[in-house]
View 1: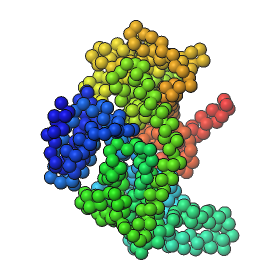
View 2: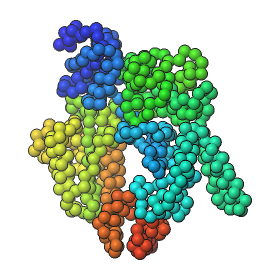
View 3: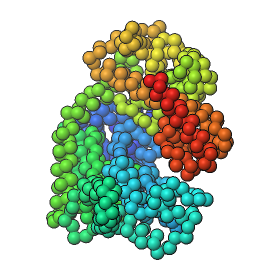
Length: 594
């Protein structure tokens, strides 16, 4: 069948969709020439990830388009739609935060992660190394420039006004010229020029020193040090201060390493790295990676520099920005520097990557063979947690192709607060798999219950009642509460697990993941329950104020960190004092018990 279909492939650009025996799309690719590209999968000896992919292909489809650019656009849309398991280029990839200076009449600074939700992207600066670096930068600017801090204007000045970090715009008329000057200085700093801000800090530091306020002067000195060490990055000797991204790559034993330098204001602000197994040819994988890169919360720069094996004109047509494969000069030196960093990253991490492959992909394959499953792409695990029947919750984690997929994790708050593990397991399993059927969600190939035979039987009954052909297994623990066997099949067999094997490590990792996820949710619910009970006991806090406090602070521990002055800034004075006293009393009671 495949041979006949291969003969019919046209010599035209397009996309192809590889399918497995269950008619599931497992890979989407693009091609300048469909006939040459698709037939290449079935010619010659394949290795690594390509060999695994080809072994699962039983059929394929293709779509002919008018140009390479159209095939690239179609490929991106098909990957978004089907999320094929072998299109792993951007799966679990990092996204970095940006800093936004809002376009309000009285602006404020905020940290933004999801750029796709932002309609106006003109005043976004970054990407920043991590959310801590972005938050430190926002805190620094808020300290030096008294901008608005609240999302909506309050009726009276809040705590920030009293500590001189806001000019009280809600109650005071502020000169527009003063606000515009602050905005321009902040923009200049975020573009990579710290001169104005450092001069302002130095002047203020001098004033505090003259007043003999050495503690304040020391704090300002620390701010200067932070700017020098953290924010002033490696200078690049370019003739301009254009925002540009630089891509480099290196390959070794079937793996592709990619490094991206983010150059902003003539400095390397940050770099981003990714290592993954090669599925197609290096050129195709690298091109696809760059094409997908800006789909996930990255702003396009003015210029993108790419290695010469990449089709720069294709990417330029696609992104509508200048894409260049430099042949000489400083821009070529940047490519070479990115290539060298990619090579070093691959060399330093190759052994760890191989070990991780053995402990994930290979262990997953071993589990598939033990359970006689035709495929094992997705595993769902459950665990329960309660406190003497109270705050009853359950958690579900998902592993796909040996690695956790945290976007698919789910939390369940149980309707009945009773200490009944079987009842909890029945409710969770029914809620989960009834929804899988109703909404046609992705089905697991295996369900693992982190419990004994009883809980395993409960889940099996639910799955069978919904006519879902999904295998359910359990994990048996010994007298030391450590897992030592897998419970599977019907009638149930105990399958011993070698504690030195990669499979044992794999199962233990999944157990730890679901246990920690569920416990974390349980603590969150418990803390919120304690907070609700305290708020209910405070006169002057009704449903509306309680809802605002719960939404803003979420847990009792966060509320306990507030000072009386901070409470008085958001609540009437007598209510603030009562709440503050109640929280302090509870804190002291806990300390006495300890």
